[in-house]
Image (cartoon, protein in one colour):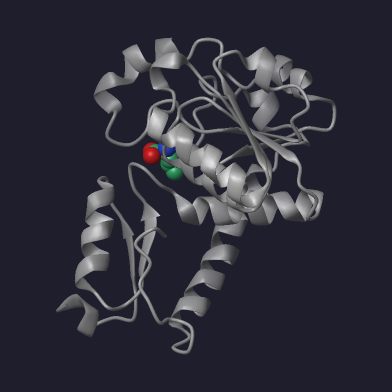
Length: 226
Ligand code: NVA
């Protein structure tokens, strides 16, 4: 409540999602999740702006390859809420749990998109219009770097995987990228890579969120989910 007297909104980047919930519980001003261990909704907004700039409003297939992490969760959640065909492939030891899988299935039921997830990239990647990658090792996991990295063998986005997706597939990444780990130079630097357009859209979409929330007529509630 003290901080809420000094500013109009709080844009918080935290480790633990419970910190965001706590901020929302004790403040009447908008609380915006700028990244936590479970969600990255501001990134997903920039991602779907980029996808629509590139593909129009048609519902295409978007596949996340790698870790079932914060970026993947928000991408799948937003895509399914918008009715897209969302897909995921990654190693079994860093996969979605049953609660998360049920949540994604419920979103399909409600919004009419589709969701496919499997550890086998060959079953998931073909026919993708967008392939999305993020770091294999996220914030706070640095101590597990070597062991975690070895589990992701076979999930690098390289030319072979992009060819499997299809000749018109585009590449997305939230950045920062770890070249040679989750993505090769030839993919991230290719003409089909949209990563810098995405990065610019972080600014564009964040301005949209701020102007929406700071317009008093619209900012009636805080949103712990966002
Ligand atoms: N998954 C990454 C995203 C960085 C924007 C992390 O949490 O570190």
